[in-house]
Image 1 (spheres, rainbow, N blue to C red):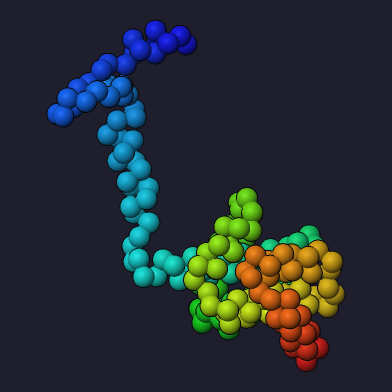
Image 2: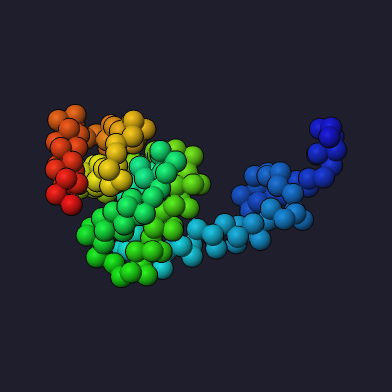
Length: 183
């Protein structure tokens, strides 16, 4: 489309202050688009206090699901470990646990990177909570009785993104390994 055709489709509107703008007057980009954007962003906050809490739960669960899925084998032992960990950390009903697991799986599948989860956790978790998440990831990795190199890699990567020290990373691994041999 040539510059002349573009300019012909637009009408110059003069605002109250006498400034000019070049927005088309009769298009789908007018008030209806603004309304759609406000509806999209505005309706998400039923209760702003619970929004970060749910997002943090979801981010944690998605990282745990990532560890369970990284070796392309999400078996029953890993599912049970995931549900147990989510229950211990969040005290949810059975239906809420299953819903969180499904939502975490979907979020993990649609995520473009780990950053969207780790950034949220870095913003809202303290160092002790990050350490506990690292222990939980190790528990998922040890749940099926074998530690896959990809599981270890993803836990190391997430721990680095969460700024968990190497000594805490190793301590978390040892704690989870000891717990897995008890069960």
